[in-house]
Length: 446
Picture (cartoon, helix red, strand yellow):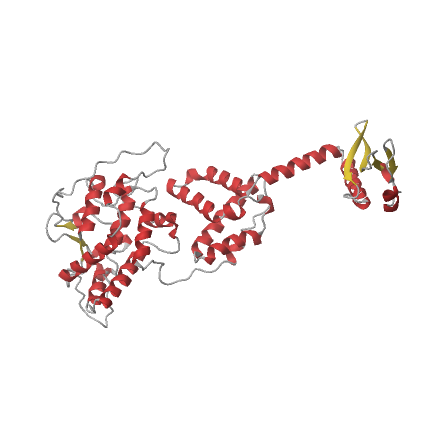
């Protein structure tokens, strides 16, 4: 039996020699002074040798432990050398299976079930929030604390809902990895219970004019359908509710070629109970400003032959998806910071601050009318949605001009590609109409 003292005392000789230990383990001392651990064993009728490393990097105790492990493998009828090589290859392959690699395989495998824009949104969110932190790490070595660290970073910037959505996507990647035999468990599975709860109340909105313009420009540069870009622009200019915009019909627009163009939203499409939806003269009137007209001229060649301003991508008689504008804002990086409904809060905040600066306190009531806010029963029994129209048109013009300052002409929004360069299924868009274009007359729907 060897001891550490014997091993340290061993000196180099002109020829290699062995210092033996129990069960065919020995130390090979080389002429250069190297001390190498070796173990002999018989397999399939042949004598073989296995290397365990060099002393003192591998101690006597470690060498004996490696011998015992190899002997256990041998007793199972396997060649310890082959088993060692397979284990090394397995570890190397596990290192190659990084989270990013598996996540991209998962995305490629699953994207056929999603809309193209939604699929792009999913991989973009992983590239932005996950890959920079854990993308290069072997997926099998990721632990709940590592994944939670990624989610906490997202929460720290105020994007609570984004953190919850990212957790679901990370978990889906691990489930795919389990099915492929790459990992054994999902460390993201239980983390939803420790994330911060969503705050209920007002929806997120940017209410400063300059950041609001910056957001609109960023969102309009996205690869989206031209009608989606134009819908967001018109939503921001009119501050109507998103549902009212999605259901907008060409026959709701009046006097587009005249001095006082108007959008008459039927009471039946307005927010409120059945009594309000059925009331006489309950239509909500939205003054159409020159920037709004520019949007409508750009939109006309795209949807003017149909009934809806913003039809769906697949069915012209159905409205656009309720998520289309929201996804547009999310892809621009504003998830958790601004939602489509937030344009109403932006209009209210900015215009009320403007009214206060200009000493126009009476305009506060007019601004509420423009937002179609229904007063409580304590205030007024009869709510006239058509009141103060001249002043509403003036305020709508002030808002549209302030917001449009620095924004590109709406015709640019239909010229930008709706798909990344390299995708050849792009449909040729009709040429935009000129500023002297005259809208045709149509009967207003009953």
